[in-house]
Structure formats: C-alpha cells, structure tokens
Length: 144
Image 1: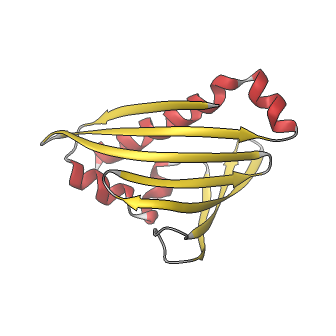
Image 2: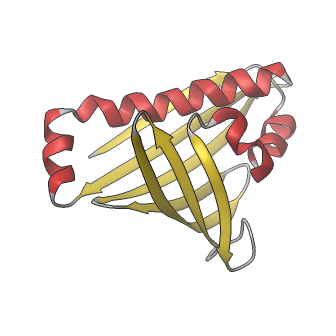
C-alpha cells in the first residue's frame, strides 16, 4: 500500500527542521510514544537504528527505525519494522514562503501474516494515523 500525505506548517522552514530533527521532541507530537532508544550507528545518520515503543490503546507496538537518507530539508527517509509490518517513509520539507513550510510524506507499507488481513479490512487506518502524526507535528511546531 502506497500513499502520500502533506500539510502546511505556519513556521519558517529552518524552525520546522530544527524541531523535526531533535529526537527529544518526538514524544511531543507522536501520541503514544513511550520510548525512543538509539541502538547503533551515528544517531540521525544513514544506517542508524533505534527502537521505538508505542502504546496504542491497549496494544503495545515496538518497531525498529533504520535511517536510510538524511538530506534535510529535501529528504529524511527511513524504514520502520514491526511485527507483520514493514514501512518505508520519505519525509520532505519545502519552503512555501518565509513563514510557511510544506511537509510531505511518502509512505509504503508491506504486510505479512495477520497484518495483511488488518490492512485489507482497514486500509484507511494507516493513512489516517500517518496524517494524525503530520497534524500533531504541525500543532506542536506552531505552538513553540
């Protein structure tokens, strides 16, 4: 499953990138994030691996992030592996004006096992969650 989401943030691109690039901010806009632990590589650089733990309702989800591209603001990409789900995310930022930034994500999900059934029954849930992260990041960024 592939899809793109985007949102306009009412802040200059330099401020948006600084907030996005600081892992200490992740729990301020990623609802349910319990922990973000660096595992290997140089943090934030291609090849770096981190473990993210989320609490989503009564479920706990653990995933491994691997940074694949770091060329901000043009691209910050990574893979996210969880039980039954492999997700490739490309984040792109572009200047609209001195006070506005476009934040676009390209998402590709691949599913295995039981998650194939979930994805078939609820394909909109993945796009909805991705858009929620963008909206929450926008709200956090504009409130700082």
